[in-house]
Length: 97
Image (cartoon, rainbow, N blue to C red; front, side, top):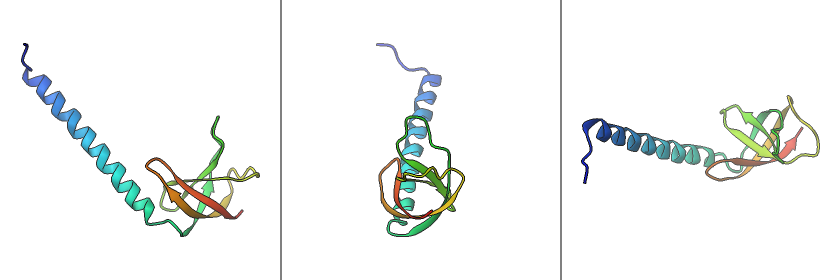
């Protein structure tokens, strides 16, 4: 059975470190965004992405919040209440267009 050379071992260590940092960043993001559930935030609405049913915008804390609206609010400043989060997204309800 072949053994790992020092370059392969180093590459494996780097890959493991990168994965660990990614997991930690994801956990910190989730905990940070979770602290906003129930609060209202202002968003600057970004362009609707292709094949994306929900609009989204960035809040003053620079995370995206997804919300439903029948109006195209691209470029508008709006207020949403943050209702729920998951590992990838934060979801809110439009309060004031």
